[in-house]
Length: 541
Image (cartoon, rainbow, N blue to C red; front, side, top):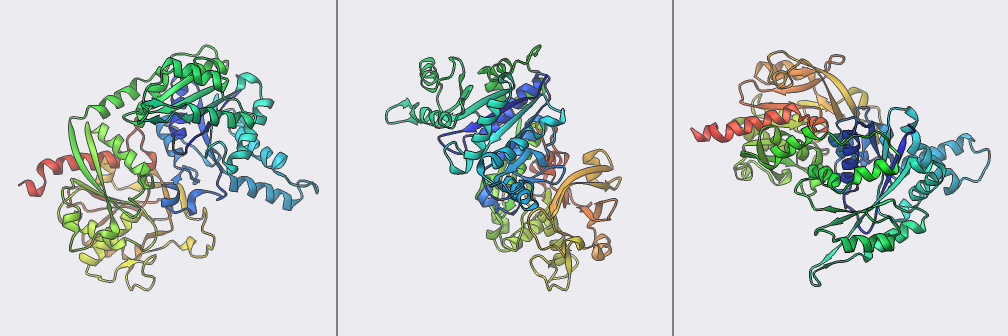
């Protein structure tokens, strides 16, 4: 069977959930026994989101091979349970960088370099790259932005050309649009969808299926009207009604026959019905928890929920694994200080100090760590959160009042967190951090080892600064143990307080590897410890 390609575009408004629809369809096709992956083509000119402020673009997701990518790749991995790579996220910046580099090398033999064919040819090459490996039966390609955007036009043109070049049964177009509800008129309006599809058709792409985001069910009459005016077959207009969880969407799409439409359009024979038993079990636990627990997330970017998307989803997975609902309260670390920390973190059964960069809000994170340490509250520090638990311990246990990370205080006399040696000579910011998966050896008998159930692990990283091992002996003599290290470099990856009910700091990002069917052990452990603290914590005695 030839590799099949499904292109997913969006119209009317941004943030409709193309990534969730792409992930849901991919999950259904995977559950039918097909080998599936998803790729994201983003229209912005940045090479990658690694240098973007989280307020601009949400979290920067990191793949196993060290690519800094769009957060939608996190959805892809969580739904499919398979890893993505550098090839799965392409931006306009990467396309133009490649084309301009080729032009400088003389690859175009003096030709005038133009959007068509040179830019579109490079886009098409990237779109077909994963298919050329022979590893996949179906590749879904999500086109970022909204149809009609100037930035998206070359990508839509590339899709048009591929629809013309590929055999008809190897290519499918899905268009996600919005059916707004006017409360004053008490009716759903189809005109925005008609205009969106017309704009797509003017670019030469006719969708095979239209997926309509809606707050209210679509009547058969409305579906037929959309099909008629948008030139798609009756039955190929389906609804994506607001769901109680994003993980419910695959089941909703199956009820709408989206996966069946796909396999028939793509001529995939001998397909089976999707096997979704484990997915349904997860959803059942998620929807009917027997307990609740309160986790406080202390971070710098809490005003934008997507800045900590993978962490929030990891708590959803860990909650289901513990048969409980996890209520995550976010606290802006800039607002936390020694005088108000007890008030700001009141009611927390567990505390997570989140990743981040820069000096802003660091002191609030240090205060939060101290509060968790001194009050026996289950604690997890991730990346910068781990670094701040080292700084806090140095100041308040070891007595080094000026202890700091050199990121914030370059001249400190106790640089307990310092820049990694191989980072000191770098001048370019984009894609130059310690990125991707690295091995870590856990000490037998440590809490981390008991949670993972093994001594050898691999986790993903995104940082420039590290624990300063010159001070390791002082820390360990006083109770903060380095229980996880990189076997090649000796870099401290995991620290613990053995005398504390649950106190772990990790230099890596465990949230990137958490999925509904494989919740991450550090998050499940934190939630379990938070449940115990809720019932038997020091204040309950």
